[in-house]
Length: 503
Ligand code: BGC
Image (cartoon, protein in one colour):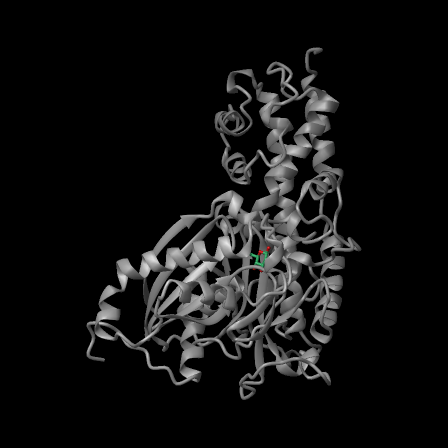
């Protein structure tokens, strides 16, 4: 291989990076299209952006109390926890985590769900033996966080629409996932009732609302992790598909006039009307288990950013001789789909050292390119690409947030001609957003980049962007599922019993 021209290498990296530009104009176009698809999904079943009514009709205010079980299936781990809600915006949580064996992600529903039930059994035996001794006939209520698109028909009933994030268990499609879990729990003779089905975004919204300071309820729960999605509080009157003649709808409380909607924004613009579509995105989609689906998610979330980076590194190798000294073999990691983890982008972004030693280490650890064989220019070129991909992800993430703030009427108009009518900055209400997930938590500067894009949306501007309070809802899925199980149990008049307590 000819010696690498380092100037040409950097120039080529910059050219590829420009393909990941997502301009202010693109953001604004994205918001417009998102608003259109939101409306379509609220009005009709079967839309790509599914806009799922969740049957959750209010957000907590911090006074909720009791002990609930929660399980969480949605990514690489399965978690079981018990949550004790204290009634004063605080909680305690005990949890156990089990990695989901990779082959189980594409097995059959009995294999997966019996594995989940086994984990619940081990957990309650370890942590709740006293409960069953004290109250032999009482069932613990369980909230099931299931972070895939389901057609929800009641607070504890939802039929799986499709798998995402690498799961692919065909016989589960169209089945009620609560029933699948309950059946396996019953088979083990456990006194546990699956009381509520919750998407992780809804859990995040609930948890943030329970713990977030101030009187303003949380508007939106958003995940930027392995996958991406958001749930927000919508007016019932706008969810017109629920009131269409013949709509197959379960019971819900209409008194609040609101319902939490799980947008499933991962499938925003599957038709690619406005989303960027580089050759690296196209290659990734081709290699995925669900081509043409979750197109927004595939440009944003943790499951995919590493692969986009790998594809762009390959392009840089082919066009400008990246990793020339290392002499990469045809069967090397660089040529193996999905071999780069998204954490690589976070580490590289965080590496501000002169010699980019950390970047080289990450390339060695993940791609097995010996650090000693990577020149400083090569490390710099990789960093240019990694930054461009991370930045695009953060700017794309602003699109649904801006659109939901606009759609729910939360924006304050720019100052009126008669200034008396305009509110002062102090009078403007906070817009509270709960977030969670590895990308928003660990990618350096993700929120800052996202906020820059929010300010570029005309309806928001700096004035409204400043009103947004964004915070990580720690343990959101567990606490949120517990909160919804609490509401569901209360509605059914099921008493909460706490072992060892006289309350
Ligand atoms: C799923 C959503 C989920 C999101 C974040 C997506 O792939 O479709 O239901 O909320 O990932 O976990």
